[in-house]
Structure formats: structure tokens, C-alpha cells
Image 1 (cartoon, rainbow, N blue to C red):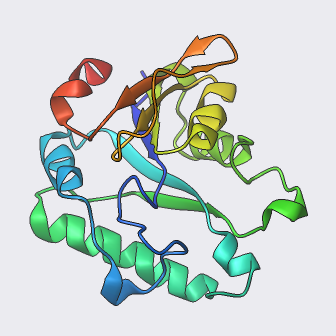
Image 2 (cartoon, helix red, strand yellow):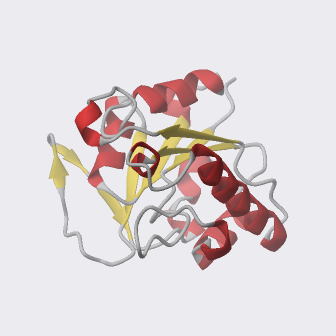
Length: 179
């Protein structure tokens, strides 16, 4: 039996990203529904983040600053919940013109996460806030969901697939994925 895996996007899904290129740990703010989600989540489920961090490639911040920001995310989750937090962060430091295979919507990092956690795609769930997150997850064979916190997306179709869109991480919306 494989252990289930939740793959999150980071900026805009877990943490507020009002200015873009989030990296200053003292400015790290987590959405409140993330705390309630982690509190309700079974601790036997693996959790990771797959995130584009082109701010590194653009020279806006260092890889070290990104790791410190990630540490702060986990620190805040652990302070407000009884959950261990995020098990691993996978990131792409490249800018779009680099045309790498790890930058979402490509799925190299998603596949890397599945391999790292020895998880089959049907045992995973990808949660992000952009269509590129949805594309990265579904192209790897993973059920994928968009969190549209701003309610700016209507019913969307992508490559003949219905996109599941929720306005928050309200755990009751996701409970059936973990049964």
C-alpha cells in the first residue's frame, strides 16, 4: 500500500503573495484556512510543495533566503497546529526563458515528488492556485484542484478536463480525497 501524498503550490496557495516573489521570512503570512486544513489532516499523509521560484534566477533573492522562507512556513504551521508541517519543498529556480523541464506547467518536479515519496499518481492530490499548477499535476496523472481565493475564475475547461475549483482550503471540500 502506498502512502498518500498532497502536493501543494506555495505562493498564493499556502502563503499570501501580495507583492510577488515572496522570500522575506519576517513578511511570511499563512492563509488561516491552511492552519485548519493541516489541523484536520491525517498525519499519515505525506505533504510537499512544488513551486516555481524564478526570483532566484532573476537575482531578486538567494536560494538560502528561499529556504529560510520555507522554514518559516513550517514554523508557523507547527506553532498553530499539531501537525508536523510540510515534509519537503521542491523548487524550480529558473526563469521562463530558460525553458527548463522543472518549471510548472511542466511536470518534472511533480514526478520527482512522486518518486521521492514512492507514491503512485492515483494516491496523490495536487492543490494550487493557477492553471499552471493544474496542468503540472494532471499531466503527471494526479487529481488536481485550483484554489481560487479571489473568486476570479469561472468554470474552466482545460484539454477537455473539468477543473475543480474551490475558494478556500476548507477541509470538508477535500475530505473525500482522503477516504
